[in-house]
Length: 266
Image 1 (cartoon, helix red, strand yellow):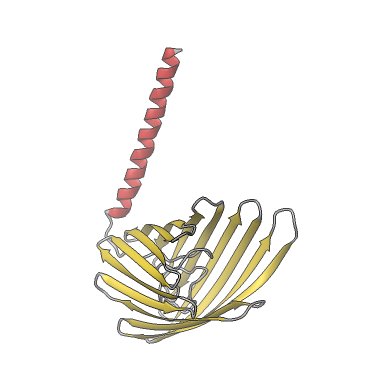
Image 2 (cartoon, one colour):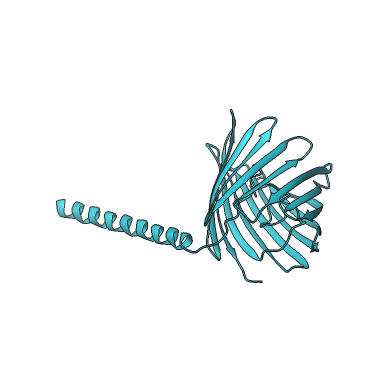
């Protein structure tokens, strides 16, 4: 009996050490390759904006503008709420060149055993040196397990104007069974270590900044009024990136996100 216990303990320790070694190897494999990190923005419908939905670059999400410049890439993210069984799996993909961008976004959201939502969106942007115009169509399929499902249609129209390192952007979005929601914003993205943004959706003001150092980027954003905070850390190499983000506010349920991305050659 004692020999069986020792053998089981030895096997457990060996397995644990192997998993830790694999994790460290993958972690350092991302870090040792130089590259520029990009902050992950909130892609789930229940997540606050982190990098700003009107950012001129980045993989698409639920709150994202379609008027973006192409950086061919794809990514997978997973969101969950604290102390509540609500999660969201998200897949983003984009391709294009200096003249256009095509992006797709798919999200599967579940809440306990009560609610499911499968949301798909495709976007197209025509881009010039100083301008970008884009639009998106989204289809939401919602259902309660064991009951009939229903569909909703969503549209986005957006544009941006670029002057040096400053991006002015605006977007109209909404489901056909709801009203149109406007949003405006300004982003400053420098070639150095700092970038910042401010966005207003006529209900809340979002401001944020990110700080880059080699392969690491730290990001934060704040919402006013009804104060809320979102914080994130990203690591990136020449082709891969990984990030973790957390959003929270006083007396409310916080959300968490992990994300993995890969950049493709044009």
